[in-house]
Image (cartoon, rainbow, N blue to C red):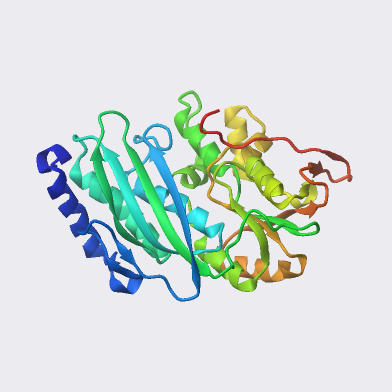
Length: 341
């Protein structure tokens, strides 16, 4: 299996470009007028749209552990991390640029597999890889993806926009990815039993919510949104701060995930700490107009997405409360992931 050192930079780039052309990425149909092979890509926006841009980076042994991921899974997960940002803006993904900092001993075929996982995941949501960059490193490897999408002009979702009385909804089961990572990386615990499979899948093979977000955008139901890449509690704070609202979370509406309860028993922590604490789930936290709840639930059923309505926005700016089944209120505490914390 040849390495990057065996092939050299330009032959390695030819390998990557050849693999990408076999998938059809960078075709004229995707709006890529000039792709790899020139100094920059030329991309064509649809009329009457705004450009939405995001970027995310993975660093080896910090964002992914090579012993737990295949190259294809690493590429796919990086794609989903960026797709989640566009989903939170209600944007349609279009084009991506991939930069790789890799060691010269990296096997070329594994690098092709990584790119294939990324390209296939982007293509499933309508996006194409239009180019990128390849550089050599001596220490930890890193991957950086810039992703561009479109929204109808003036229609991008933002964290600001939630209003008192709006309903707070969340997709999936927040906390699963973080629990899966902790189970996989803590030697004294380790994955135990088939129940852990869903937790490991949430970490290793997350699901894009782009198509569901686009369906909600067509319903004009969402007033504010954020993706849960840092954890439920921390990202809820961000949404409240941007919108100038508070939130009452309702215990009666919150169904604790049995998989998280299983992980909590193994790890010796509370299930609430897993559900609300730091976790890169790539789920969506949404503020929804109350009269659009039924339409959103129908869209969730059509797309096979779990959508839970867990609370309501209030006029108590910045105040997040947990309301138990008896109507008693207490401050809701928690924090999200901090890269420098």
